[in-house]
Amino acid sequence: MTIFRDLHTGSFVMPNAWDAGSAIILAEAGFPAIATTSAGIAFSLGAGDHTLPDGAPSVPADVMFDRIHQITAAVTLPVNGDLENGYGDRPEDVARTIRRAKEAGLAGGNIEDYDGRRLYTEDLSVERIVAAREAAGPDFVLTARTDGQLLNGSVPLADSIRRLQRYREAGADCLYAPGVNALPDLRTLVAELDGPLNVVLGLGSTDLTIPAVLEAGVTRVSLGGSIARAALGFVRQAAEELRTTGTLTFATQQIPQADLNHLFARHATHRPH
Image 1: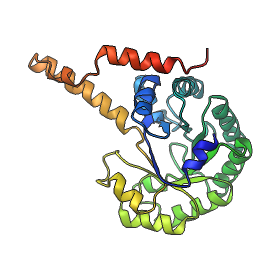
Image 2 (image 1 turned 180 degrees about the vertical axis):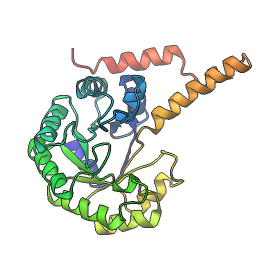
Image 3 (image 1 turned 90 degrees about the vertical axis):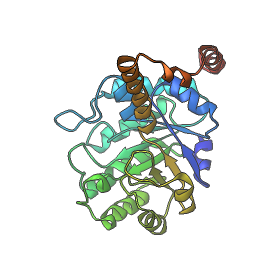
Protein backbone atom coordinates (compact mmCIF):
# COMPACT_ATOMS: atom_id res chain seq x y z
CA MET A 1 0.00 0.00 0.00
CA THR A 2 2.97 2.32 0.37
CA ILE A 3 3.17 2.19 -3.44
CA PHE A 4 -0.08 4.11 -3.63
CA ARG A 5 1.06 6.65 -1.03
CA ASP A 6 4.30 7.18 -2.93
CA LEU A 7 2.38 8.01 -6.10
CA HIS A 8 1.07 11.13 -4.37
CA THR A 9 4.56 12.65 -4.27
CA GLY A 10 4.22 13.20 -8.03
CA SER A 11 1.23 13.33 -10.36
CA PHE A 12 -0.79 10.55 -11.98
CA VAL A 13 -4.04 9.57 -13.66
CA MET A 14 -6.35 7.13 -11.88
CA PRO A 15 -9.32 5.97 -14.01
CA ASN A 16 -12.35 4.37 -12.40
CA ALA A 17 -13.52 0.78 -12.84
CA TRP A 18 -16.94 -0.67 -12.03
CA ASP A 19 -16.26 -4.41 -12.23
CA ALA A 20 -13.39 -6.88 -12.54
CA GLY A 21 -13.37 -6.79 -16.33
CA SER A 22 -13.12 -3.01 -16.59
CA ALA A 23 -10.46 -3.02 -13.86
CA ILE A 24 -8.31 -5.46 -15.81
CA ILE A 25 -8.62 -3.48 -19.04
CA LEU A 26 -7.64 -0.24 -17.26
CA ALA A 27 -4.74 -1.98 -15.53
CA GLU A 28 -3.58 -3.39 -18.85
CA ALA A 29 -3.48 0.15 -20.26
CA GLY A 30 -0.60 0.92 -17.93
CA PHE A 31 -2.07 3.24 -15.32
CA PRO A 32 -0.23 3.11 -11.97
CA ALA A 33 -3.48 2.88 -9.96
CA ILE A 34 -7.21 2.67 -10.55
CA ALA A 35 -10.26 3.64 -8.51
CA THR A 36 -13.77 2.32 -8.11
CA THR A 37 -16.84 4.33 -9.07
CA SER A 38 -19.94 3.97 -6.93
CA ALA A 39 -22.03 5.46 -9.74
CA GLY A 40 -20.66 3.00 -12.28
CA ILE A 41 -21.24 0.08 -9.94
CA ALA A 42 -24.80 1.25 -9.28
CA PHE A 43 -25.51 1.61 -12.99
CA SER A 44 -24.13 -1.88 -13.68
CA LEU A 45 -26.66 -3.20 -11.16
CA GLY A 46 -29.54 -1.32 -12.79
CA ALA A 47 -29.69 1.21 -9.96
CA GLY A 48 -29.29 4.98 -9.89
CA ASP A 49 -26.64 6.91 -8.02
CA HIS A 50 -28.00 8.37 -4.75
CA THR A 51 -31.67 7.87 -5.61
CA LEU A 52 -33.17 6.84 -2.26
CA PRO A 53 -35.57 9.36 -0.69
CA ASP A 54 -33.31 9.94 2.31
CA GLY A 55 -30.32 10.65 0.06
CA ALA A 56 -28.56 7.41 1.00
CA PRO A 57 -26.66 5.42 -1.63
CA SER A 58 -28.97 3.21 -3.67
CA VAL A 59 -26.53 0.29 -3.46
CA PRO A 60 -26.16 -1.17 0.06
CA ALA A 61 -22.70 -1.24 1.58
CA ASP A 62 -22.56 -5.05 1.56
CA VAL A 63 -23.25 -5.17 -2.18
CA MET A 64 -20.80 -2.37 -2.89
CA PHE A 65 -18.02 -4.05 -0.93
CA ASP A 66 -18.65 -7.36 -2.69
CA ARG A 67 -18.00 -5.59 -5.99
CA ILE A 68 -15.02 -3.68 -4.61
CA HIS A 69 -13.45 -6.95 -3.50
CA GLN A 70 -13.95 -8.40 -6.98
CA ILE A 71 -12.10 -5.39 -8.41
CA THR A 72 -9.17 -5.51 -5.98
CA ALA A 73 -8.85 -9.26 -6.48
CA ALA A 74 -8.69 -8.87 -10.25
CA VAL A 75 -5.62 -6.60 -10.41
CA THR A 76 -2.28 -6.26 -8.70
CA LEU A 77 -1.99 -2.47 -8.82
CA PRO A 78 -3.36 -0.18 -6.05
CA VAL A 79 -7.10 0.51 -5.98
CA ASN A 80 -8.70 3.58 -4.43
CA GLY A 81 -12.28 3.18 -3.24
CA ASP A 82 -15.24 5.47 -3.74
CA LEU A 83 -16.63 5.08 -0.22
CA GLU A 84 -19.38 7.70 -0.54
CA ASN A 85 -20.26 9.22 2.83
CA GLY A 86 -18.80 6.28 4.72
CA TYR A 87 -22.21 4.53 4.74
CA GLY A 88 -23.40 6.37 7.81
CA ASP A 89 -23.47 9.77 9.44
CA ARG A 90 -21.61 9.06 12.65
CA PRO A 91 -17.82 9.03 12.98
CA GLU A 92 -18.02 5.40 14.12
CA ASP A 93 -19.88 4.52 10.89
CA VAL A 94 -17.05 6.04 8.87
CA ALA A 95 -14.44 4.17 10.92
CA ARG A 96 -16.24 0.87 10.29
CA THR A 97 -16.33 1.60 6.55
CA ILE A 98 -12.60 2.32 6.47
CA ARG A 99 -11.89 -0.97 8.23
CA ARG A 100 -14.05 -2.78 5.67
CA ALA A 101 -12.21 -0.97 2.89
CA LYS A 102 -8.89 -2.27 4.14
CA GLU A 103 -10.28 -5.80 4.45
CA ALA A 104 -11.54 -5.54 0.85
CA GLY A 105 -8.00 -4.84 -0.33
CA LEU A 106 -8.23 -1.13 -1.04
CA ALA A 107 -5.06 0.96 -0.84
CA GLY A 108 -7.04 4.14 -0.18
CA GLY A 109 -10.51 5.62 -0.23
CA ASN A 110 -12.58 8.79 -0.43
CA ILE A 111 -14.96 9.99 2.30
CA GLU A 112 -17.53 12.66 1.37
CA ASP A 113 -19.02 15.35 3.61
CA TYR A 114 -22.44 15.10 1.94
CA ASP A 115 -25.28 12.76 2.91
CA GLY A 116 -27.11 12.91 -0.42
CA ARG A 117 -29.26 15.87 0.65
CA ARG A 118 -27.03 18.33 2.47
CA LEU A 119 -23.49 18.90 3.69
CA TYR A 120 -22.63 17.72 7.17
CA THR A 121 -21.71 20.50 9.55
CA GLU A 122 -18.07 21.41 9.36
CA ASP A 123 -17.31 20.22 12.89
CA LEU A 124 -19.02 16.86 12.37
CA SER A 125 -17.20 16.46 9.07
CA VAL A 126 -13.89 16.98 10.83
CA GLU A 127 -14.82 14.40 13.46
CA ARG A 128 -15.62 11.95 10.69
CA ILE A 129 -12.19 12.45 9.10
CA VAL A 130 -10.49 12.03 12.49
CA ALA A 131 -12.30 8.72 12.96
CA ALA A 132 -11.41 7.63 9.44
CA ARG A 133 -7.75 8.44 10.01
CA GLU A 134 -7.63 6.46 13.24
CA ALA A 135 -9.20 3.44 11.52
CA ALA A 136 -7.04 3.75 8.41
CA GLY A 137 -3.64 3.27 9.98
CA PRO A 138 -0.42 4.58 8.44
CA ASP A 139 -0.52 2.98 4.98
CA PHE A 140 -4.10 3.56 3.80
CA VAL A 141 -4.37 6.78 1.75
CA LEU A 142 -7.36 8.73 3.07
CA THR A 143 -8.97 11.25 0.71
CA ALA A 144 -11.34 13.83 2.17
CA ARG A 145 -13.94 15.06 -0.31
CA THR A 146 -16.13 18.14 0.05
CA ASP A 147 -19.17 18.38 -2.20
CA GLY A 148 -20.04 22.05 -1.71
CA GLN A 149 -19.03 23.02 -5.24
CA LEU A 150 -21.60 20.59 -6.66
CA LEU A 151 -24.50 22.43 -4.98
CA ASN A 152 -25.40 24.92 -7.70
CA GLY A 153 -23.12 27.70 -6.52
CA SER A 154 -24.62 27.89 -3.05
CA VAL A 155 -21.27 27.34 -1.31
CA PRO A 156 -18.46 29.86 -1.87
CA LEU A 157 -15.15 28.38 -2.97
CA ALA A 158 -13.51 29.88 0.11
CA ASP A 159 -15.81 27.80 2.33
CA SER A 160 -14.83 24.60 0.52
CA ILE A 161 -11.16 25.52 0.86
CA ARG A 162 -11.59 26.08 4.61
CA ARG A 163 -13.27 22.69 4.96
CA LEU A 164 -10.49 20.96 3.06
CA GLN A 165 -7.84 22.70 5.14
CA ARG A 166 -9.50 21.43 8.29
CA TYR A 167 -9.81 17.92 6.84
CA ARG A 168 -6.11 17.98 6.05
CA GLU A 169 -5.34 18.99 9.65
CA ALA A 170 -7.61 16.14 10.80
CA GLY A 171 -5.47 13.60 8.96
CA ALA A 172 -6.56 13.45 5.33
CA ASP A 173 -3.77 12.51 2.92
CA CYS A 174 -5.42 13.81 -0.24
CA LEU A 175 -8.08 16.48 -0.82
CA TYR A 176 -10.91 16.53 -3.34
CA ALA A 177 -13.51 19.14 -4.33
CA PRO A 178 -15.55 17.92 -7.31
CA GLY A 179 -17.33 20.69 -9.16
CA VAL A 180 -14.31 22.98 -9.40
CA ASN A 181 -14.07 23.13 -13.18
CA ALA A 182 -12.24 26.38 -13.98
CA LEU A 183 -8.48 26.39 -14.27
CA PRO A 184 -8.03 29.58 -12.17
CA ASP A 185 -10.05 28.00 -9.36
CA LEU A 186 -7.95 24.84 -9.54
CA ARG A 187 -4.81 26.95 -9.28
CA THR A 188 -6.33 28.61 -6.21
CA LEU A 189 -6.95 25.21 -4.62
CA VAL A 190 -3.38 24.14 -5.32
CA ALA A 191 -2.03 27.36 -3.83
CA GLU A 192 -4.27 27.38 -0.75
CA LEU A 193 -4.20 23.71 0.21
CA ASP A 194 -1.29 22.04 1.93
CA GLY A 195 -1.59 18.59 0.45
CA PRO A 196 -2.16 16.52 -2.68
CA LEU A 197 -5.25 17.44 -4.69
CA ASN A 198 -7.55 15.11 -6.66
CA VAL A 199 -9.54 16.48 -9.60
CA VAL A 200 -12.24 14.59 -11.49
CA LEU A 201 -12.51 15.00 -15.26
CA GLY A 202 -14.71 13.50 -17.95
CA LEU A 203 -18.10 14.29 -16.43
CA GLY A 204 -19.12 16.62 -19.25
CA SER A 205 -19.06 19.75 -17.11
CA THR A 206 -15.70 21.04 -18.29
CA ASP A 207 -13.41 20.98 -21.30
CA LEU A 208 -10.29 20.82 -19.14
CA THR A 209 -7.65 18.33 -20.22
CA ILE A 210 -5.37 16.13 -18.16
CA PRO A 211 -2.20 17.96 -19.23
CA ALA A 212 -3.75 21.30 -18.28
CA VAL A 213 -4.73 20.29 -14.76
CA LEU A 214 -1.45 18.51 -14.09
CA GLU A 215 0.42 21.60 -15.24
CA ALA A 216 -1.68 23.61 -12.75
CA GLY A 217 -0.26 21.49 -9.93
CA VAL A 218 -2.97 18.86 -9.45
CA THR A 219 -1.62 15.60 -8.03
CA ARG A 220 -4.25 13.05 -9.05
CA VAL A 221 -6.82 12.93 -11.83
CA SER A 222 -9.78 10.56 -11.53
CA LEU A 223 -12.58 9.98 -14.04
CA GLY A 224 -15.55 9.26 -11.78
CA GLY A 225 -18.31 7.34 -13.52
CA SER A 226 -17.51 8.80 -16.95
CA ILE A 227 -16.03 5.66 -18.52
CA ALA A 228 -18.91 3.55 -17.19
CA ARG A 229 -21.42 6.00 -18.62
CA ALA A 230 -19.54 6.05 -21.93
CA ALA A 231 -19.73 2.24 -22.05
CA LEU A 232 -23.49 2.36 -21.46
CA GLY A 233 -23.74 5.09 -24.08
CA PHE A 234 -22.09 2.73 -26.55
CA VAL A 235 -24.64 0.02 -25.71
CA ARG A 236 -27.44 2.49 -26.42
CA GLN A 237 -25.87 3.53 -29.73
CA ALA A 238 -25.51 -0.11 -30.75
CA ALA A 239 -29.12 -0.83 -29.85
CA GLU A 240 -30.31 2.20 -31.81
CA GLU A 241 -28.31 1.13 -34.87
CA LEU A 242 -29.72 -2.40 -34.70
CA ARG A 243 -33.27 -1.12 -34.32
CA THR A 244 -33.21 1.59 -36.97
CA THR A 245 -30.87 0.41 -39.73
CA GLY A 246 -30.11 -3.21 -38.96
CA THR A 247 -26.42 -2.59 -39.58
CA LEU A 248 -23.63 -3.65 -37.24
CA THR A 249 -20.92 -1.02 -37.58
CA PHE A 250 -20.67 -0.93 -33.79
CA ALA A 251 -19.13 -4.41 -33.94
CA THR A 252 -15.93 -2.96 -35.41
CA GLN A 253 -15.19 -1.51 -31.95
CA GLN A 254 -15.34 -4.80 -30.07
CA ILE A 255 -12.33 -6.47 -28.50
CA PRO A 256 -11.87 -9.90 -30.09
CA GLN A 257 -13.03 -12.76 -27.88
CA ALA A 258 -9.63 -14.48 -28.09
CA ASP A 259 -7.94 -11.32 -26.84
CA LEU A 260 -10.31 -11.03 -23.89
CA ASN A 261 -9.94 -14.71 -23.06
CA HIS A 262 -6.17 -14.38 -23.05
CA LEU A 263 -6.22 -11.13 -21.07
CA PHE A 264 -8.55 -12.38 -18.33
CA ALA A 265 -6.84 -15.76 -18.09
CA ARG A 266 -3.49 -14.06 -17.58
CA HIS A 267 -4.86 -11.85 -14.81
CA ALA A 268 -6.62 -14.81 -13.19
CA THR A 269 -3.22 -16.31 -12.37
CA HIS A 270 -2.60 -13.35 -10.02
CA ARG A 271 -5.82 -13.81 -8.06
CA PRO A 272 -5.88 -15.53 -4.68
CA HIS A 273 -7.42 -19.01 -4.75
